[in-house]
Amino acid sequence: GSPLLILENLHLALDRQTLRLHDHAWSCTDQAALIDSMSRGDVLERRLKKLDARLFEVLLVLAIAEEPISNRIVAIALARDRAVLETDLSELEQLAMVNSSGDKWKCSHDTISEAVVRMSADAKRTAIQAALGVALASARDADAHELRFALYHLVSSGQFGDAEIVFRRAVA
Image 1 (cartoon, rainbow, N blue to C red):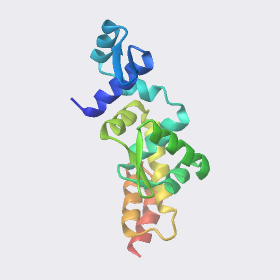
Image 2 (image 1 turned 90 degrees about the horizontal axis):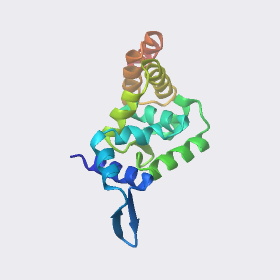
Image 3 (image 1 turned 180 degrees about the vertical axis):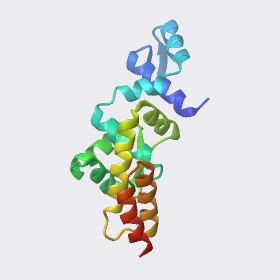
Image 4 (image 1 turned 180 degrees about the horizontal axis):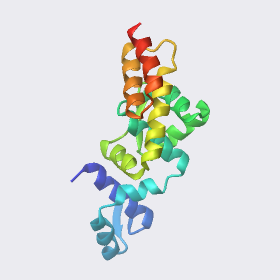
């Protein structure tokens, strides 16, 4: 199986106290409940549902981006204060949901990205993708890669007018 799902199952079992870790030793308090919980296979979605809407939205931006992006872009896409966003990213990192690579962030595993996208309504995904495209295009010094990335998200979200403006900029 997926190591991520194994770890998620362990986290959930610890949260539910069907497993305990004390003095570097594991113990099971309710074997039937543990087996039942692990057999349902929806452990990651349960963990994601426990996040507040603010944190889930940050994960959704990172999942839709499909590649590492800066906290500046995430803050612009969500219209949030950058300092607050950095706190949110730090919290998600402590929960092993995201990780950073230099100054860029991404979901820590493809399985997390897939689950977040699957759990989100179509309208919300489209709105986030449009906001992401606008945020990527907003930098005056955006390079060709960032402009192509912005175009992809704008076109995918149906923002053809904005995409046309960005395309002209990219060509120029």
